[in-house]
Image (cartoon, rainbow, N blue to C red; front, side, top):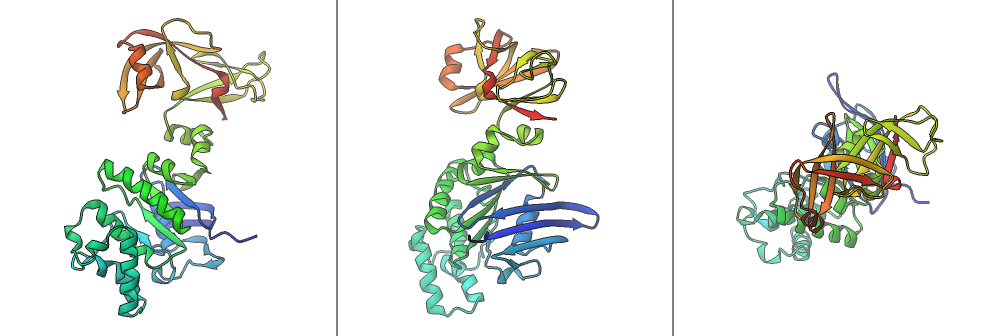
Length: 358
């Protein structure tokens, strides 16, 4: 069995008493697209910088193909980094920017020009080889930065929020280009982002970080539907979280909560009296004026709505400062047409909830 491409083994980074990354473990297989995400200050960029060699771990090991990288210089790692700012040289033209890394490695002029031109053609920039990078659009500059890294033919490409400075329509286009490029080349991508939509749209696995630790690693759908803890449940998607206690007379199938007596998923096997949190995706909530035939039902009033394109998030008051959110397709919202303050029923099937044990 082949060994993993990249291993982070109890890696830690301390800055004079402040621990930015706390003893994390991560295994990345060859050819994977891994996205690391979390709130600002969670340690994701520090982790990427340690992989790139721009920071030295305080403890633990970073291994690439079983070679310990902790004290290997960045230019000797074969792990180029595409920066958020792109970091192109404004005094060089497009081809010269792409050639730069090869020049630093001592590749002769004819060979590095051939390689650079090959990648420029591949990324649709062949006609811009002699143009100053200052005369390119944001999307074109992004592709130049990618070409500059890919021309080095790395096994592992690191990307630090590379799409954050682009307009929304360019972000979607570049996401598709990155996915296609990564699959075609078979290069492992390690991609840091604060954007859930970017991570879920592109990555094979997503790493959720908070407070310098890894909270969960998994496929996007797994993380979205089965968060490992309350932090992930609140950070990902639009989840409703209801705290309660397993009923002693319900055989572990119901909980007492501030929203009433609620049924748990059938697969739940919890001791009576156990404290749990019920996670229900906003897209699983149904809204209706007439009382529906659903096991879990909460009377609510409409507080307002948030229009986000093809879906609408409806904010609901469940009384006593409790709230819920329902996410409806736009056409369903338009059919229901709820008025502000209107009384409705919010309901869901027990099997569409996920139980977090506390």
